[in-house]
Length: 303
Image (cartoon, rainbow, N blue to C red; front, side):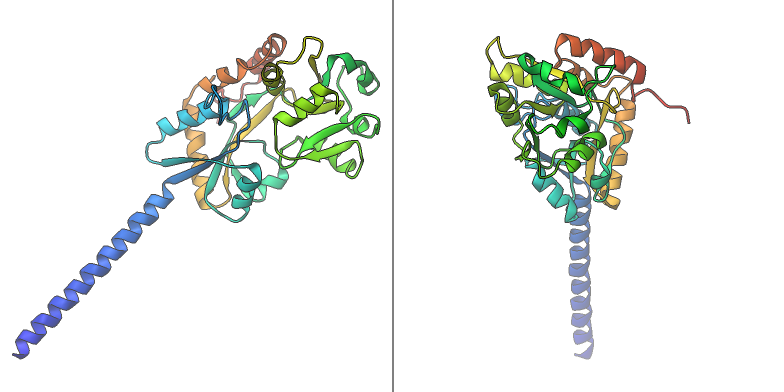
């Protein structure tokens, strides 16, 4: 009888061990699954990411992300529509999320791990209506570039800029210096709005990328008498690099390192670079090709 109870106790012990082992195995599998899942937060930011309309999914960051997904089957990739405020809010909370197209800034590096170069674009420009371009001559130097700091101090010229948008240091410094001025207006993250305001004459200039200028000029279908011109900004490099950004930490670092591996294998002119070039007007496309030929960040670098 005593032997029988010991046998039952042994079986019970083995059963408990099996349950515990199963539980550990399940939790381990769940942890592994979570570790290998990537949530991509995608604002509607044409022509970088296009979330709606007949050209949905054709932005150059969309094309890059599809390429990356195909090349990394070991990860479960999930896409979610999201505002930039939510992107950065979740990253600051330490949530494991990524964004495929970010400008690297010192403020963001506090809570974001960045990949190496992923996108190659022409830099921010001052965008104006062609019939008002003469108003900006006083702020252009001998090379034709605009001193954005002096420009923003002109209270008679109104501009608008978007919250949570990344700007290069020269522009960020000018915005900071002009904080509180009535002619420098902060708006929401709506990308189309500033171009509509510029086309209507409600603002005198905005700061945007050349690919945006061509995109919104086509989208708005404005009258022939209203054309956008864009002027280079003094102090900016002739191109801008975009990066994948993931929540800072061991997980984010692992993802961006994998991104770097994939980009390195994509060749000296990855397919999404062509998608970017096609968005430009003829003059900008010619300049893009010239700048790219001289500065391509995708060439193999000597070790």
